[in-house]
Length: 627
Image (cartoon, rainbow, N blue to C red; front, top):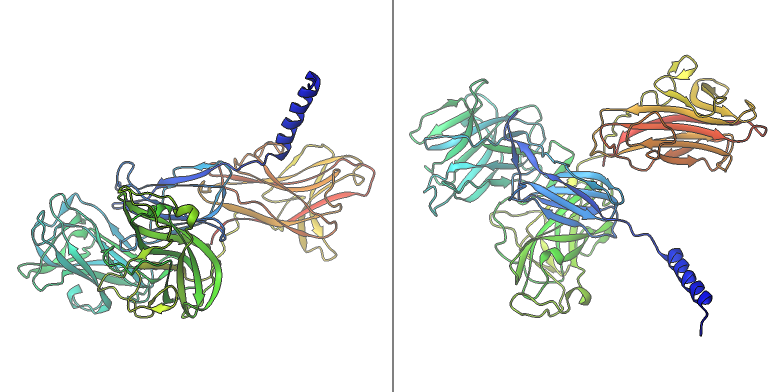
């Protein structure tokens, strides 16, 4: 028999063991918001539904998270959940008028819920007002716009009547072209680049769908600042339509209309139209140009590849239209590893391999949608003009497939794979082709979208005042507020080195003053975006390396408070690990709780009779983190 005291001791020992060996598990983090755009300047907003959202963690270990913005209330809403970390979040709508948009880096802290992050896409022209429409049939509309980007990538339209039978089942194909401003009226201006095709337009009554067409970057070149016209017409000669538009009586006319009866002229209206260009830091070398989707399968296989020619310097995002059927888990439970190979499907793998997630519809025995993954700048470096193969390989296995039963009672055959879709005619990619299992060359292209970063990133400005300490306010560095916890702490702007041309913010104490030291400088930075991520960098030099009696510290406070150096909200970085030399320091990524961040520089020592204590701070920068 075990004695009572011994039993209690054993239980205490076991509890202590559990406490010692329990590993803390990071809490789930959350990002949510809505995708919106003003219907017109100063008007209410259009909530953009059916936009695909893919969030990929930095590196190649974790799988992407996917979401499709809601059509129902709250319309345009998205939600991404996952472990804490740094993500690249990609919003896209292949085949639609939406201009792809990337958020990078998005840093989510342990257990953080970052709600209300609304996303607004960029357009060179956007008018989404449906309060009025053309009450007479027209054969052509020419809507003027001023180019911001160097290449057109998408045009979106919304008609009040399709020109065939309105609410009936009939439809027609429309054509979109771009014309550079020249002599005469827009119907006399020269066309730039190829036409975009918009098949099966069926609008009228309750059917007020948005239709779109697209181009690869470079197909329709533009000159920023110049005026162009988007022409919308029926493919068939004599075809008519009626579009939504908005009164534009207070400005110079920008819409040229050709009526069914042949009348031509400017009208004081603005067309319901979206024009997307390469006005940001992205290019689309491989676009989905036709809004129609999910029409012809390429064939079930574990691995598919597609070659293409890069236009940018780094991969940004990839989507592939695909389906899984029979006794397979839905697309949302399917993943593919995305590799980039240089030169072709057998070439060398370059950059980071990503795990793309599926997102789409599921009927119980079939699922279709798209795989997607997003990349931070530099994760997959590219050379403009280089040939690359994008490889998609299922990572599903016996564990994820075995035992799955669909709504019809069909049991999984445990075969990993997926069925990509072919591009929809007349969409065609002339600079590459697809490969089944990475070897068998096919005579078609895969229906997908590839987005790249177009160039090197331009560093964001330094948000700190006098971060290099070169400007003086008496004996102190200008722009910085001094503070002391120990009254004998000496604070000054110090002329460094024999030349006395460089200056630092210095904290002095210990034997130099015969007293303990604890103090430094603080600066508040305002006007920040609570959804943006910032990082502090600089240099620290101390006469002592970091130990119990000497600390030189740099802190950032997401609340922006400047009153309490011991506030628990300050995130401190301590150093340096060696004395007498400047050491670079970098804070963790920080996001303001509201619109401000405070930066804290601090030196402290408890010794009073040993070698003097000095802490120097120089070349500090607080910058928006951009990719």
